[in-house]
Image 1 (cartoon, helix red, strand yellow):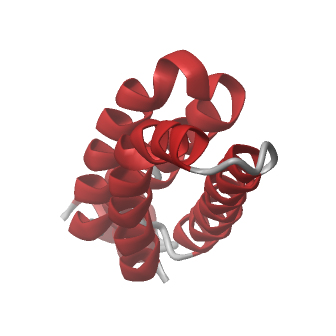
Image 2 (cartoon, helix red, strand yellow):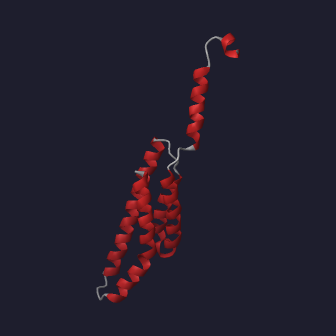
Image 3 (tube, helix red, strand yellow):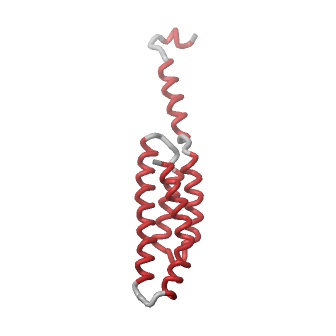
Length: 134
């Protein structure tokens, strides 16, 4: 799941970078006044798909104790585009690049090793205090 989310983040990054040139070319090359709006709606739909997929990956990563950084950055990058596509398409693309890198790493979260150590320590403690000191 995280691999597909990382791939979609890379695709969204490229789409966000070409969104404004595509919209402007469409606006100037067609006589249909609604064409730029339809193209913009496509880019917004892709961003919403990215948000939902990153939320799903966040839940799955939390369940499997994988680092959440990539999914959180993916959500932030897509939300940046949805909220302020007029001024934040470049920052959204940069955040999505970083998100894709972190998602592709898929390393366990730092607190899972501490939890495993605590389990091992508590399993080694015996009921008899005299045996515990030796």
